[in-house]
Length: 276
Image (tube, rainbow, N blue to C red; front, top):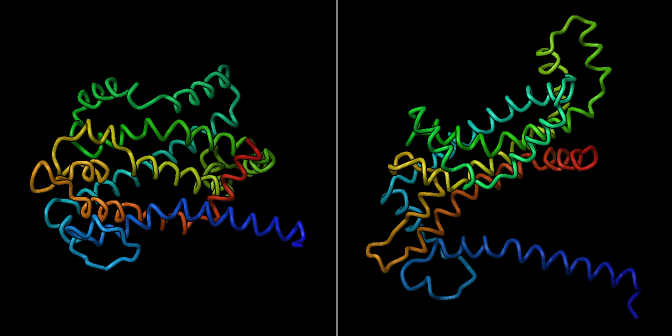
């Protein structure tokens, strides 16, 4: 009879295998489908043929390279601005005592839960008033509404737990508040910055509604909208091969970033879970 501990391990490994298969198989099949053309798309096969026709056609039939560049510019700009403003705001909320601080934090948390459609019309009027319609700065500004609230909230939670003695010692040595943030707190906030920055990058990279509403030309669109608007030669044709190839291309940067920062992401999320 199999020992109970061994049976538990086998069951746990089987459960992990099922979860991994359930999570990875859709992306793997998208990779396999991205190499199929014509009638091959309607045949169920599990091994790729490495036909690059779909990958070539999405770059030659539409400005997909420009769309990828737009997403890169918007996502990295949103991350940089969110982290820069978030660090300064979190320092004020975590270290400076003022009336209404708790209410302000609750308001920030509430704003982060607003659905996009609730702010769409107001954001449209704001972007049009600023003259940023159909431009990348307009998309960056719109995405900041989504990423800045939770960035401030997470970084405030993390900074609250940092020892006050470090800050006081720096003030005794003559440091200014900005120097305290830059030279004392930032080196300690690496895991929190990596985890929060990656979450902001994923939000900006995948954002669809603002990009669809605030852009008109193909040259200003980001990849989620570009993929959604991929069309075939006729209205009855849906080019699944091109769509799958484009989906694989836009997923690869996220996987690479997660693999690069995986240790800092786990540390940051764990710290937030314990200290929050």
